[in-house]
Image 1 (cartoon, rainbow, N blue to C red):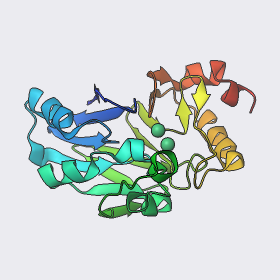
Image 2: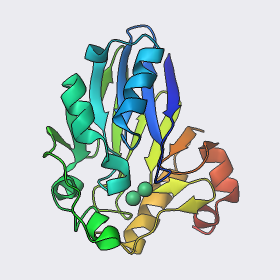
Image 3: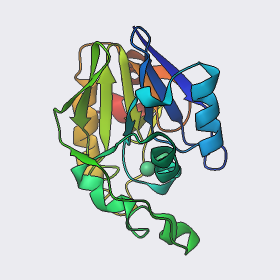
Length: 212
Ligand SMILES: [Zn+2]
Ligand SMILES: [Zn+2]
């Protein structure tokens, strides 16, 4: 069984998630936007072994989702994975929007592995599936495992991500949302910002999914 825990985040109000496969104790951190202290505290509070951190997963490369990537990798040795479309965001502050907003640099080490649509990532006895959903950025993805769907900044509760930053494309985002809306299952959605919702609710109430 998968369990998902929100790690409190200070500053930019991005959601950082701890995804745990309970039987094996294997886990993954998605979008390490919280401080490294908060992330390590959440891991230790649950008596998890840091060596069981399988992947540091990024839904996309914007600065508010990657803040503690290097620190978490250094503390645990876990590999960093991002879709190939956002590869440059880790090392380029123009691309990850930090420079655009704060006129300063914020960069990380290059990723350890680049993801593509349809990739499978084993987590204990379960598997995370990578679904490419470009539009917010070229390398935006959703991660799907069991009844859980992590949507990053592609889909929020009753809203969607902006497309005016580097690599954004509204037409593409609408196509990606169409693809998500067509999924039969009713996944619980854990977005990059805001509250947890379900795919069924978003099909009914999200104006961007309704009009498609
Ligand atoms: Zn973003
Ligand atoms: Zn964001």
